[in-house]
Image (cartoon, rainbow, N blue to C red; front, side, top):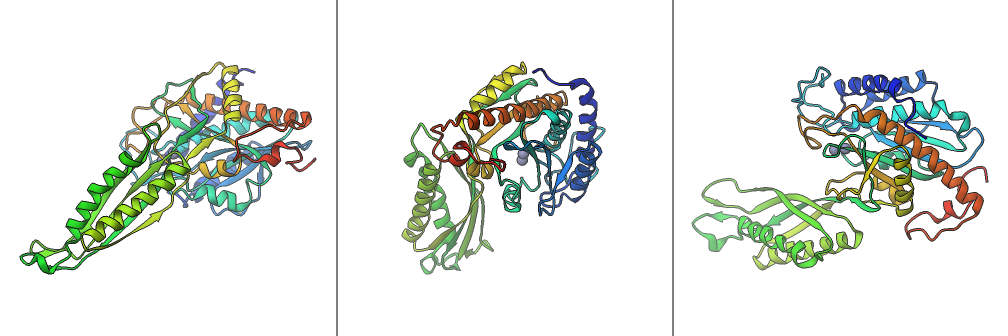
Length: 410
Ligand SMILES: [Zn+2]
Ligand SMILES: [Zn+2]
């Protein structure tokens, strides 16, 4: 299988991407984007599926003769960033920009839809297209799952553009690819006093300073050198005047981890340090966690299969270094095995930068790879089912889909 009808697709996908790029919408507010995607899908004769989502679109291709259901996802939201690219199709909404390239992802999924539609009669299963809202706030995947759109799905696939990989390169890695991204808020309660009478105070700033310093040892003294974690305190608010000792302080920051056991241990040690160090200085301190998505953990079997598909299209496959950024695709992978991969887009800047951009030559490549992955995944699932093979899959994968009868027409 080569890269299908790419030339004629490229112009169309560039048009989609530029329109989306010029009209970005923030997470959870993708109303016009939703309407536009629905219109484009309808124009291509692709059937829309009815799931209760305020924003975002679900559509389906195939399934005419039953068979397994697989899902491909693209996120559609933009960021509160003022664009500085000076591109002719730059954002027309001040302060909002597709600075993470989700416009690219959406155009790619639309392209994959079109390629799969051309082969719909040959498809021996259903491809469910998830145009997911609200990724940047890590809420959209949960909303899609809540809507029921992941039900019956045996494998799920998603991508992220990667500015530091060349076009024509795919980054695929079994196991952890992106980090669990938790936020924290620490409150330190002391007692205020005149700055000249410290003995009457419990100084919240001094306590915070000790807490911040002690937190630097949470990773270095508790996490194996073979694992990794990041603790960053990014915000500290305290004090009112030069001659008043602060009675309270509020700190914020983030914790990034790639494994659940490391995540749990770091959170536990973190809390002990905050409350213990605070108490040693007489202050009452507490931690509130803002739990983000878990780590993106790719299924080894689907990683292997995806690498085969990429090579069959003549693409270069590399094993990327894991990214400490978070990605709510992790919520799908908690429920259904699959792959989240990187697509080389040779951009000038990293994600979320005001001059972020992507090489549009990657659009038809992403679309072809998604489409080929869908076809190959359906074939692999059918073969598994017909062979009745029960594989010893990773413990957290969904055994029932492998054991047979996992989809509707069994
Ligand atoms: Zn982002
Ligand atoms: Zn993103």
